[in-house]
Amino acid sequence: MPDLWMPGATRLDIGDHAPTDGGGAKAIAHITWDRNASAAKPADLVPYASLRSYFAGAGAKVAPHVLWDPFTGRVTQFVPANSRSKSLADKAGGTRTNRAGSVVLQIEALFFPYCRVGDAVYARLVDTPCKGWPELLAWVRSWGVPDVWPMGRPTSFASNRSASTWASQAGWYGHSQVPENDHQDPGSWPAFTTGEVKPPTFEPFPGAAFFRAGRRSPIVKACRLRLIAEGCNRYQSSTSPDVWGSGDVASYAAWQRKCGYTGSAADGIPGKTSWDKLKVPNV
Image (cartoon, rainbow, N blue to C red; front, side, top):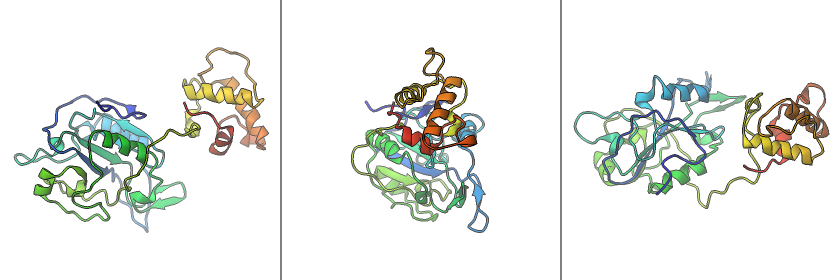
């Protein structure tokens, strides 16, 4: 049986599980579209944590299966694959949109047109890094959803719906292509990838905020072992090697200095460039 919970995703079970009705396996592409921006007036991307908290709380009644951050690859899953979620409008009578398949996997990409991340502005989802898409697609495929768009791969925010196609064909549908709904997203969606998804050789940079005092993770231990191997051992204790603490900060600062950083740039908090140079094995 495929994984009910996507491997590598954060599991945040909101409950309210219910079965689907059977039929062709489907996946539904959404974007969060939580701000209205334009080319003339772009807006900062809403924080991932804010959307995750919303779907786990006040927005639980419209939560998707997964929230996907295409800028970092983070994924949070709210209900198991074999349950319906409630991101689609479902009018009385007619098709039960959220249940119309052996699975109806609903994917919300953290995105809105002309969102700003750092100094860059993104008009379309496909313009983003789309990090984590191969892994997400592999999980969707494992549930029997075929690599097809019965109504065509979305390339604009125009709606295009067919109740007969929806009832008879498995595959991917944009929110703009689902009967009984009036949303126009996602506007675009990444292409299907080919080949087996392999884990990276080295641990991807988890972000500077990851390295806070008391953080427990196998990544911390793997980092420690690499720092020791690079001759940057400034640890005063061998206890709790998987917990980030003062010894890690001192040792990483030594690594930063070895990489040529000085002053406040060698503060002991990992940055992406120095992290990538350290080559921490994937855990």
